[in-house]
Image (cartoon, rainbow, N blue to C red; front, top):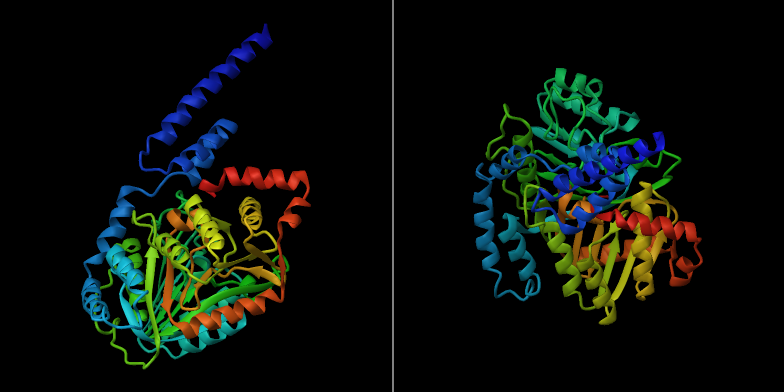
Length: 482
């Protein structure tokens, strides 16, 4: 008798759980269908617990947060874009940017991503090199330092960074910091206490002051930006923490890619920071002014656009840029990404490019950062290897660079991985650069990385154990929500 009632109770729980799962997932009519079925799988396989997972990871940002993000364009930043659009139109007869015109117009139309063609750009691939130069530039700051990172850890490097910002705040320099509380392991108020007392301002991205931990952990501020006096900008993949200097045994040497930029492209980074700051801080709004947006005449030779994307936009600008780069390549495609979980459109585009004679090479890490994500990355790598695409695993340490180069002429470097999360869930920012010189430099860096990498062939994946292949396949089922 007891077993009979137990079976009835289990059936009732199953029916109620299934009905609640359907109501929960399908009520959002704008959610991608693959994401819908992935969340259904989680809710049905893990009754009760699945709803807790969904509460933390599955809910989208509120309409209030999205509205705050979308209404930040009225600060005068649009005036810069208007002026730059005129400059782009004047390039229509120029032989230099014939094939880049489609890119430039795409990003201008999507989000007023201003175009500038006289920037000085330095590529930084080593953490010691990057932070040495960053600290030098911060020490020389005169007016303001605007910082936005996904991760600022409360460790040795994190404290050195905050100490330096505190010194500058005491000197009267205006210091503002935005960080993602999920990526940084919480609010870390003790870390920022001295900076705030010195007059600096620190905010957790889109998170009320009273809230201890983020309730929406599926939409991260994954951007990495530093703007100094409106003159120097940093953008790329490095965060702030000891692991980015290779100090954590788990990761070993940290291989990343970051850019130091001097020129009008810095104004676009500043614009992005302004919008994120004003959406996060309700009481200390930043407004357009020449002290934050100075004019530049650097004599540099790099043309570029700063492109951002996130849940506040339906255009998925960076994803569109990635797809456009792959589809327009004639000779070569070189990709580095720590998390390679593309959608079907990207997979098809890569396969088509390879079959059309384009030399496609992809590099991923050889060790996991997040287990499910890494197994899913391995799954997609195996599919591409079977299609004859060259896939390499970087063995020297952990590869965290997010880069694409096509035909030795167009480059993308930024925070966005080649995965579904970066395409639509995270707040990201990338630099798209139109420079043969920089493209060749990036290709040389890739060739150097090949010396510490292993080619992953179809035979390599076929020799893996059945258990490992099962984990890869199962992780792939969860890719829409990873």
